[in-house]
Every structure is written in C-alpha cells, then in structure tokens.
Length: 381
Image 1: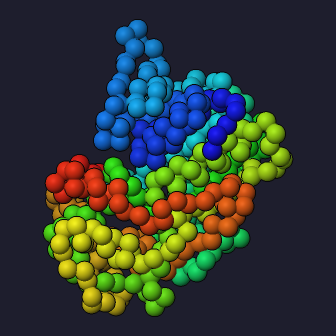
Image 2: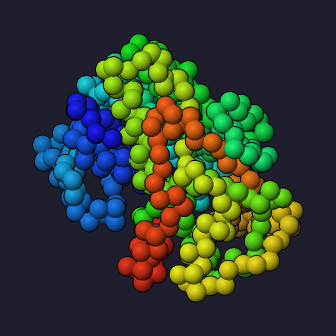
C-alpha cells in the first residue's frame, strides 16, 4: 500500500476503533492525517498516545503515537460549520463516524440521535467535501444494508437494498440511507465517492462487537447454539483487513491518474472472506475461559421468543428508570444466526484487497491474557 505522493486525509470518527487504526496506517505511509471525533483516542490502542493541546485555543490539536504525529479536532459531524473549516485543503475524507451499532445506543429513545448523526451528519460531510473540492469520500458502511433476516449465500453487489420499511434494525436503516446519499453524490464537482460494506470488525482493543460476547462466555451464559438451516455461516473481519480496505479505496480515489468513473459511485463488500458460524468463530474465547463449548442446538423460534421476552423486561425496567441491556436483542440474534455472507471478488479486483489472517482471534486472546481476562470490563456496551 505504498504511495509516492503525500495526501491529506480527514477521518471522521477518528478516535474510534476503525478510524484510529486507519489513521495510524496512513501515517505510516507518510500521509497527513486529521482525526475528527467527539472523543479522544484510547490509550489501549497505542500505549504511546500523547495529546498535545494547543494553549492558544486553536481548533486543531496534535496527537503523537508510535508512528508519528496526527492532527486532532474535537467536534461533531452534526456541526456543518466545523466540517466546512476542517475539510479545507483535504484530499479525501474517510467517514467512519456512526452511532447506534450496539448496546444502549440501539434503544428506541436513541433513534433520533442515530438519524441526526448517521444521516444528517453524512449530509454535512458530503456538503463540506463538495464545497471544499475534496477529491474523495470513503464511507464506512455495513452489509446490513442488503440484509434483513433472509439467508444470503455468497451475495454480491448486484443485490438490492433491503426495503427500509422492513428493516428491523434502525441502525441498519440509517446506514442504508446514508450510503445511498454518499453514492449518489459521486461526481458532484471534483468528488468521487465509494462505500465499503463491512462485516463485523474484530481485533485487539475492540470496544463494540465483542463486549457482551466475552462477558456472556466468561459467565457461562452461552450454553446452547442457535443458527438457521444453512448452518449460520457469517462473514467476519479483522481490524487489519478493515484498515487495508479503507486505505486502498481512499488512495484509489485521490490517485491523480484515476480513471473516471473508476471506483466512484460504487459499493464493495469487505470481510475476511471465510464465512463460519458465530459459535465456531468465538470458540477460542470459550477455550480461554475454560468454559464448555455448546453442543446442543436450540431452534431459532425458541431463541426468538426468549430474546423477545428479555427485551420486554428491559423495556419495562427502563420505564422504571433502571437500565438493563439484554446480552442479545432480536436484531443481533438474527444477525448472528441467519446465514448471510458475501463475495469479496469485486474488492479483490478493483481495490486490490486481499485479506490476511482470516478469522484470527489471536490478538484478542492475547489482550485478554495481558489483563488477566478482565479487559472486557473496559469495553463499551
């Protein structure tokens, strides 16, 4: 992924798990990186992270890490004025910022916030890119934009969007709308856009995908398996592969020799390219905690009723001002048990994307070992 020219990249959600690691890789490739987020990066991702706040009140701060120094702007994608300022002289924006993927953020009371950040925030990013003549915009999307509970076997980019009114996940609904906004903005002025439809991204320091899984395994709650008649085959994705896909797509968009339309206006499925059932994927976690691996399979209809009842209890308790989040909700049950996986051939051909270490949880297990098995406590529910 080397590059002879140096470009300036702005990463929204740059203090998040995916965004920060993309920034580090671009920094290693000698590009200028601006991280934009409402939070600061976590030290767990790089023990050498140091913030150098500007004493003169300047908007742009600096963050040093093991590979050099990145710029940092604390702000929200809902603020168009900040975006208009910080996208000046930026070659490409990588838009990873999102809200509502898991845990408390998925509750109905947060639906408006999801829409404000995921949809309106994306509109703001697009407008800032167009006004400041950015060359590229890479959107971090999800394969949920085409998935709604029906099995998909080796699907490709010709699949239609899942109808919004049928989507059970409001998060998926907002991501679908945002992706379409990004792709239809391709060709506005100098802007070329693309969307990367990721599988669930896992890796050392992950604060979203694994928290409740680790907690549930450790406490012996996952005692049965559940999956559909196709075996529950699912795509997964290591953080390094997510970074690879984003960086290669971004560099394609800013390439002065880029072809028109090239990858502009296109979506790409990205994953490790080796679908396996959820319980097979997390088996190393069972082994780490010396918990028995589930052998009994429970029909999905029984699991659906059980999870529905848990969600009713959660809603009742919330009405009493007591927060309790079930370890799995109906959308997550569907996502983790219904077979749906996608071809990455288009990404291989057009992005030169080739995943490494597929379905490898070694770094996750190593991080658990380093913290005596308690690193899950710092994860975000």
